[in-house]
Picture (cartoon, rainbow, N blue to C red):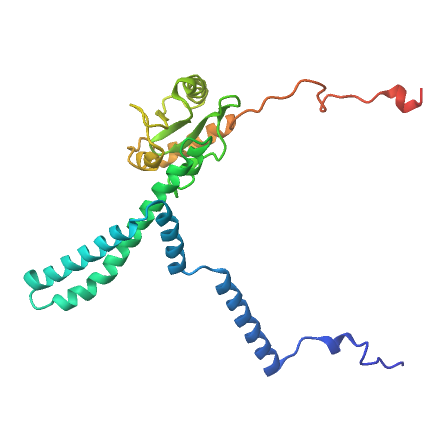
Length: 263
């Protein structure tokens, strides 16, 4: 029997076992952790990036943050001095993280309002605002109705408060689109509350920055079972129906038999 050469033995290239194998696994795990940490952005770096973005538009933002910090610390010290006596230092220590959290939340709110201000008035700006809703609503990422000439759009949401149609564009031109979508939805979901909202700053309209807050404050009218049934019914009509170009339908086209026979 011919002996196999170790140079061509496949078992010679097998992974190391024992102590060497465990050491190699640990090194690989450490390298993976380092790569994962390198890909993540630290929270304080994210805060610094947000501060720089806001400071470009609002240079005096540092005064507001300083006022929040000093105000909360002063309130904590006064509480420890006059209410919970002889604990001013302890209350100042407890007030520091609370003050930092309040400053971070205030900075996040300013950054959010600035982001809304930048996209307000652009086509499809409502989609960006609706994308910030975490739970409780079923939202179509694409508009259910749109006018390609004026770029007016209608978005549809389904939640416990019922069906909400959000119009993004000029209200006068949106009414026709909104009316058609209202009728289309009412046919498949009769008796369900349908609310129409228009994005804007005129009377009866909702500013883009307050759209999510408006949706969260709506009172529920459907239970979970009814909500599931409404979602199933709306799936039957889908979203916006794109127009089919005129011409030959490829699904109904038939081959030329004479050409196939060579005539």
